[in-house]
Length: 462
Picture 1 (cartoon, helix red, strand yellow):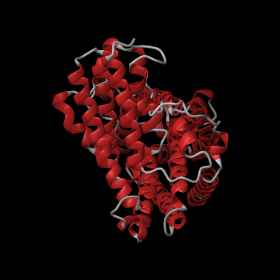
Picture 2: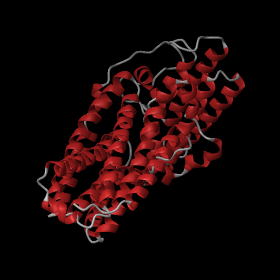
Picture 3: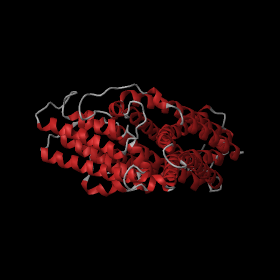
Picture 4: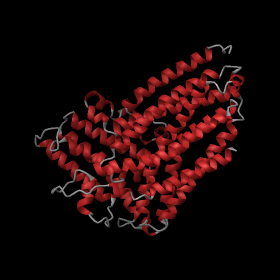
């Protein structure tokens, strides 16, 4: 029975991803003219001026050149005594270089796919450090040093990508099959990486319901996941529309951040509920005999909502990622085959992981299974909390908007700088910034105390 549901869900997900990735989302973007200067405040304005008919291939070194020009304009304003805020203020070029250029140009997504997610984290932290130095009104030499470091990092990545795509003198990547394989690996990796968190949660909850003789409750979990897939397609179109018209990707980051924090809150609730049942000898009998009770229905609905949030959080982002690769697929040999292959392979791998969780999860003894599932939910809640704070305060620019002490917390902790290059830590939402670590540490302490109290509590006499 479960295999049919897995196949149906995977099939629906595949169809939705392929359709939405190929949607002419760019049609939602409004036109924009040249601002008459040698720098551009956004990638949208640059494209409108340099590529009005959409036929020009913009290389990543050209994007880096334009980001560098914008930062140079920021330095000019910074050293000339301009005001900090406003359209003509010195802070805007430093701020726009990230949200209006690095992200909206596709630079960030391409680096994440073809180089590594940890590299994106390193670059984003350098953007934050640079903006902090500007906000703190540090010396021009200090700001210049941070700008030069950032541009050097961007140039290094641009050289790798341009070489891979065949945009540079080293044309080995674009002319052969290496780029197609790299594209396949990038799309495959994105779907597996982004889908793994969701499938761990959905699979564990489904196995949990089967363990507790409440197999009918899995329907709510599956409905939540399918609804999330449909909502992801709609949200991807909306977010692309906002990003295209506004010239920045902040709406996407804010949506992902809020969803992640909401998912973290629900996961904490679900984790505490599960751990409270781990010591109850009569829990299985109680639940199976009370499945019609309104309180138990509420718990099952909570699981369905958790499934929705887990899938929705990743769904829209995956679609936007894939859409980025489809835009480049036509310029490479076997490009579309590589993208579709990555989608099929990634979804098949995620589905296999789900089946393994379902098959082996229900074979684990009840008490250890309750413990393992509740711990998984607790760990994922901490991970979602970290990634949510990162997307809101770092990618979404909330730290810059608030400024002051909050912005000081949103930069790299020197002693923990090594963490920014670790893929595993990034997967669990652990970054070397106080803005993400402090909430996670608080939640970790609360979680540990909750687990200890639950273990000491005697089984209910229900």
